[in-house]
Length: 436
Image: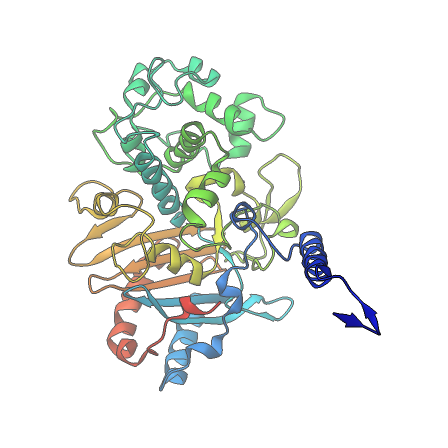
């Protein structure tokens, strides 16, 4: 072989190719052009699919009238912004945004925006517990505080326990709000300033300190005897997940639940307006002119929706995400084959089994005639997931508190049924989960 009249040895072309490949490899390694499987699984590396969505992708005949109905609904409830997602048999048919993500900055709401989902976070946590059971790291029947066998039994804060009934609390009791906890002194997850004063604390309690303050209290009920909704119980489940997995709560949930479900945009909330996550909305309270002292004793007054320790709720209420990715997570635990489930059929059945006088596992209710419901309410936030018996799921997230409080979810659920009757057959036949 000759180049410019010079005879090259026979191995020269192979050496040239090898050199080029070496150069390409070096460039890709330096720039991240190639990644190992481990890199791909690393937290927060992939772009959430909702960031590829636009409102225009959900157009259908008559949509203008549906939009007017939605805007009238928002006006009635004084909502600054909202996101609506509709899924049918694991196909995401519709994702549309309304109003403002930040009305002061005149920033319109878009599918890329994420919002606090409040107590819908409990469903996420319950999925994590079921995944740990499938991995053989815990059982729902496991005791939580028992000094010998309890998952948290060896923790230092358990030395504060005076009411021996704590030792009977199981993981399942916490999942079903049957731990026996009382809010006689207020909900410890939302009365941080009072808790600090009562316990002589100068700083907002971390997880271990919060547990210490609560372990001294007596239970109101025998564990397993009565259901009484408890944010604290799901906070404890967050610690159970950490102990059983050997990872931080968020890390385990990302690696074993959210990423396998195809959800890469879930984040844990921050408390202050200035610490919002990327693409996170601004939140609005109904009493916008009233300021409240921050939860941490700083003395600073802020809007009510930024006054509580939302981040400290952990698995009880701290997740933020988009309506589209929340739909994706639901599709991963609903037993429908359209999207592969991340839980076994047995686990999905256990979570959605109907009970007359008990909470379902993670869901508020799972009535075979009405459907599965999960609600969430915080100051500045409403979240509603309604999975109907025919496999259609409607999800609504808002960035505004309402004057009805938790009652808003009942009204919104009724509105879902009305909208389904009028518009379900007209929704576009597509699957936005395939947009990447």
